[in-house]
Image (cartoon, rainbow, N blue to C red; front, side):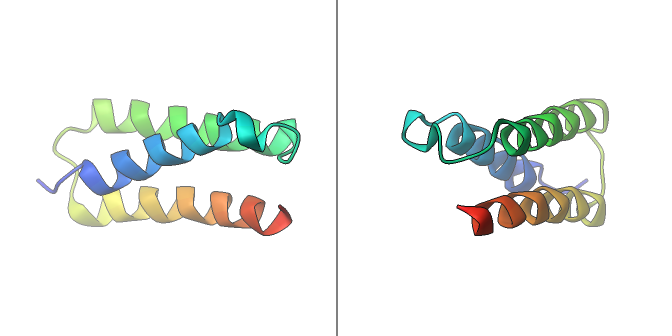
Length: 75
C-alpha cells in the first residue's frame, strides 16, 4: 500500500486554488467545474481504494495536474 498523501494533497490544493476569491473572474466556470469534478472523482476513488498501489496513485495525481496545468496556462 502506498501513501495517499501526494495525490490527496494535490487534489485539496487544486480545489482550494479554484475556490480562491482572488481567482474569481479569472478562471472560467467551465474550467473550475472540470477541476472540482476531477477533485470529487479522485477523493471518492481514494476513499474506496485504501490499499491502492503507488502507480495507481501517481496516475491520479498526474491526471489532476494535467487538467490543472491546461487551465493555468489560460490564466
